[in-house]
Amino acid sequence: MSNISAWRLGARDALPLLGGYIPVAISFGLIAVQAGFTAGAAVLISTLIYAGASQFLFIAMVAAGAPLWLVIVMTLLINARHVVYGPNLAPYLPSGRLWPWLMHGLTDQIFALAHTRLPQLLESQRLGWYCSAALIAWGSWIAGTALGAVAGAEITARWPLLGQVLPFALPALFIVLLAPRFTSWQWTCTLGSTALVALALKLAGHSNLAIPLAALCGAVVFYLLQQQATRTEAQHEH
Image (cartoon, rainbow, N blue to C red; front, side, top):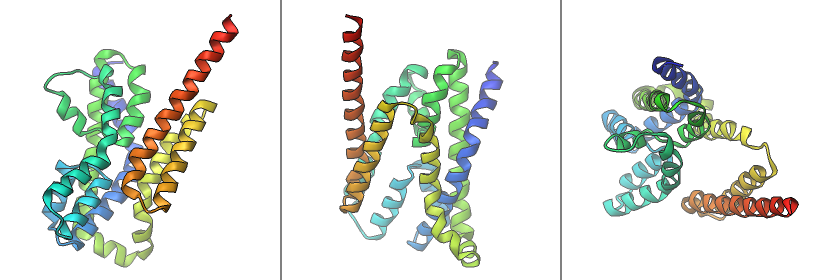
């Protein structure tokens, strides 16, 4: 596969993400304008922050008059999962000055795609694939935000059901990306426990803690099951 083919493959792999990114970005653009932000400000937020759920929290806290330090802390807290994402992809991507720019394009869905695809590619092809996939996702998010900010009110007024459906597009997409992982008992227990903990925390009213604590729980379950499998394998060898 040539480098150009790697870019084409990255674009092809990322195209299905548009089905989740654009509807949620439209919803964000609409809500941002309703919260008092201009269309330009909404697009700028999607361009520079580009953090999904954190953007919704950002505009809500700013609109409510929350202090800047608290807005920053809460945004970083929700995105703490990237501390895990980055090191997992680091062996497959070049380090140095390019690294911060590459990580700006890292989202949950890009991570899920990259974690599967990058090990299958040659070292010379990985950067092209990643840049292509990340740019497609980023561009669709910005375009969706612009559409929502400019015409979101008209769209939802004409089709009211869309206003209720749009926010669920991205979670549905992420479930589709996770589904192929349910191929072993270890992954099934890990993902199942993560989902249950997140749901329990959400129902208990701890939405902001749901993602980091559920992720931590999943990591612990995966580690324990892996250790058990290693011990069992060692016993069979003896």
